[in-house]
Length: 585
Image 1 (tube, rainbow, N blue to C red):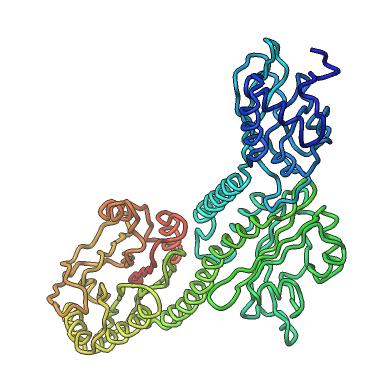
Image 2 (tube, helix red, strand yellow; image 1 turned 180 degrees about the vertical axis):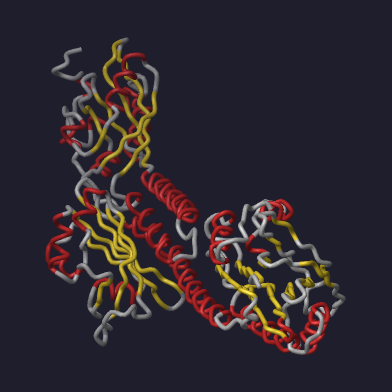
């Protein structure tokens, strides 16, 4: 076959008439049967599937009307030219066509790209089957038949993007909001977004209370800068982003403010200097973004029910593509989840602070022991997973030089537990003033608690130190035993019969009395000191008793040593401690 001149039967006599007949004849086996040729020509020309015939050099010999429609190029423009010559933005499977002509095995291939026909799906996709063409035992070219699958591909792409978004959201759920600390949560969000979605990520939240700085002007919303994540080579350029202050003041017409007020994201792709300045409010900040190579910005609000608690600012720089619609959807999903964590952390912080202040106020007025008994106390709030609870301690001077030491723990946490704790504390003081024995004090307190209707029970330990008699009498309402630390250095638990918690109206309490030589330290505590997840309480109590604590020195030093030896980071529950010692005569 002459490569420069295709066979006569494949050359077009006109663009739309004679050639299809000849091709149809070829497809029918070159039988010359006019009926068959006409029938097959109708199939080839009327089908919606693009069909093309190429010679051995992969130059077009024929394209059917469907091929013309999808390409937007006249049939005559294809003849004698390759795909790359006519449609350079379409990627053809050249290597597959060569294999088909070489071994004669039909093969499927994917053809993708953009033609001259506008398409809502952007880059189009066809699945095509290619067959070798032979004439009189010679290979003369290849025939391809395609079916467009652009919508299916777009659907699959959308599905894959949705899966990726869900996967990212699932990952974020384990990495953002791991604590009830607002600053930590904001830092986790920024660190997750950069570099997973952007080159830089900044998080700011609305400042609801002034921290001592001047108040913003009327109509201005103050945004506290909480976190900035970026590669080190960008972070140093952005370290003063927004100025040296720890906040940004947002006027009503600022991008961030409108974003938060409307609840909608704002995107500035390949933004001009004017747009950058408008988005960042200050020309200096705009120049800092530019100096860092940032070309696109995305502002996403942190929405909660009825309001936005802050905003996330994402930036992409050199080497990164602008933000897509999928990026906005993903960022909004992440922001919604993070906003819930941030709002919960803020509400927790507020309630925790208020409860802690209440707790400290209630514990700031302990009773005064007799001068011959010295007392030291400690109170450690629980970790970030729980609110302040109902732990309390007290020391009450009684007639005859005696001092009543109290350690109690109301069940539960939060404001209610703190309020109930204050009621228990006041009630015990009143009952103790009657001069009853310690077991009777617990019984009477239990009866009165049931009478006034307090809805929370409490464990309680009473220890009556009598320096004149050299004794200590202990009674327990379901509380852990105290530790006796002798001047010689040995420590032991002082086990008293454990009655039911007060508030259960089951009061039946007993006491024990032991000798207490001068210089002996009595240590009272709540369960937060010894209870640890996954550790048996008996093991923890044994570890407490085995602590090498000295009865000499100050009681404050003793408590510090104890906490250093037992506390592992932030306690899981409140810890209240009271150490008491009879002064030497």
